[in-house]
Amino acid sequence: MARETATLDQALTITEMLSPADQLRLISILSERLSRESEPEVGSIDMLTLAGLGAEVWERVDVDAYLDEERNSWEN
Image 1 (cartoon, rainbow, N blue to C red):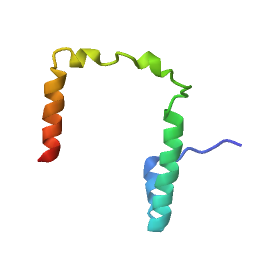
Image 2 (image 1 turned 180 degrees about the vertical axis):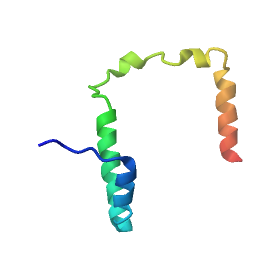
Image 3 (image 1 turned 90 degrees about the vertical axis):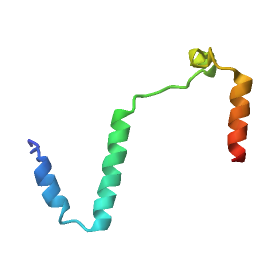
């Protein structure tokens, strides 16, 4: 049997007939479905491959001064 495709306008019209609780449930279901479909399958990550990642950001930073500044911000 051929499956008919609904338009967004039709879907919105139908959702207006749902209770607020069912509309929230629909949002949750759609969100979960889309996140499953858009997330690539990721295997385990070897943390050692991340060593040095972002090192260029810290090349010109005085680490001791940075840490002192951060610690001082906690007190304020």
